[in-house]
Image (cartoon, rainbow, N blue to C red):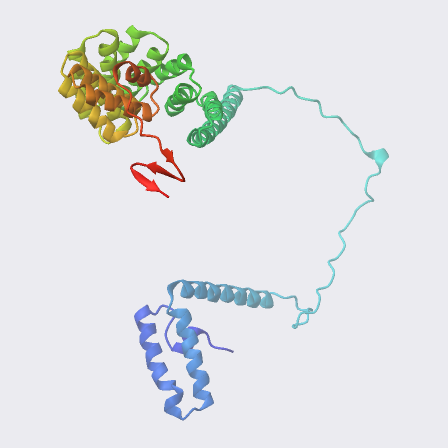
Length: 402
């Protein structure tokens, strides 16, 4: 009979991991082939000790091995118990058992003509209060399950359409972006990011300012506090585009009350004060505040400086207006309009040569409104002398070419 791993290591089944480790080290030193001149017997013993420790030295493998030992022990006990209770006439090595004796019968089985059939009456099903409660709970669970499935699918569909709308928005496909955002709002009504993005697509791309205004006002209640000022600013832009000056001014006021760092709102407010209300000093102060918050946005700074230059010009502060215009030229050096405005400042300062030079620069940059002013206020430039032919040569700029 082959030995198990415990017997190979010489430890009981209840031995601890420390005892198993000590027994392995002792036997590994005892049976190591190098100490016995390469004897194959000790080599086999060394391998058996190593295999036993590989199983018993690991907790999971030892537990599995103990389970196998217990299973084998139960099977052996069962076989022994069956062997002890075998019939006396059965062969000890597993001969087939004799067939059981047939049952004793007093008469033949009854025939069909002797049998009596009686139908079982049907009983009417009766629902108890418990059955009604179980049915109601089952129906409620089904309704809740279907509602959760619909909510989940609507959430997934709305999020997917919103993501696709953002991709179309980035690529400049305004109509596609508006359609995707509309689908997202169909599945997720009141979804604030989709409302804000659809408003931007309507305002910037489709120029549907009424629809953009409606979306912006719908997004205001649930929008983060940090974004409400920007939303009021966009509402003001939509109102101004629709020609509603009063509501536009009120929207800009609300935007600045929520966020005083909105440079574009300061720009629109200063523009209203400059062109509509003609409050030039107030417009210059408003535009100066906007410049402090404009940051690195060069285009926005250029608009603020241009309007402040106009406000200073209307107040007769020509030096300040000139400085603002030159600052804008540093941002957009090829602007013919700025050269024209500088020429007007020079005219007010009674500097006609500089005004004419600036008007010519404006014409060279393609600003056609400066052409009439140049033609009426500035003398034409002298034309270079033409070449005079003399004999076989000609005189160009005082040099004879033979």
